[in-house]
Length: 331
Image (cartoon, rainbow, N blue to C red):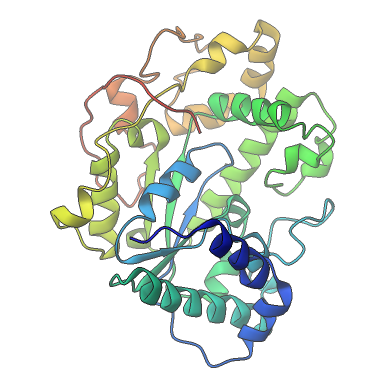
């Protein structure tokens, strides 16, 4: 695989990647058909970035993540709604997506000299836009990554602090329906309600799609059984699973999933408890409202049983046993 140099990356960004004019012109051209694109869904800070980065290394995939201006010409607006349905999908908007995705896939096949025939994308806002995506790509497939909401909330707040995004609405992360009611609240309440809103929306949308087009995994299992999860996705979605394709992925990744228990104050934990508990119970992360705060020295962060048991009977993936391993990276 050839790695682009600095000049090529800059040219890509300005000529195509973030140029609305180019993206619009390509929409009117005859374009190749896009075969079952794979969209990676999940709340911000839930592991979608590391998943997409690794998954995009598959020799049959063209990976265009994030693709901000490709999917949302008004991406940088601070007031637009991030929730889109099929009613928001205009004819020209859908064609704009299909044409650019089709040409990008064809371009990557030529540039990388690999048998690339499928497209994949990760953009957290697309987690709120499944009906919109299906309007443009009726045969789309979806990977839904779920992570412990307590770790997600702490990670979002840490990212806002580190990147000095306190002046951005909800840290510029995906805004689910109803965000106007709480975005000015205490950060732990605001981001807790944000996570619940995102997960509730995507679960509702995915419930209307056949299970064989959805692959769900927990971040906690993915970091323990990275190569195994990747192979499971490829088998379900019709991608190559030979050793040459699979062995490019590591056996496992590092886990820092319980750092929140060390970094959050008792008051902050109680705020999260008030808003996150029902969904944490539904996802199997806790058993009841009086869940204990885990020991931050616990490198795995979930028991083997929790990491491999899905609370959703329509999970679309055959769960497999995991093997705990030493820890390594937060996303």
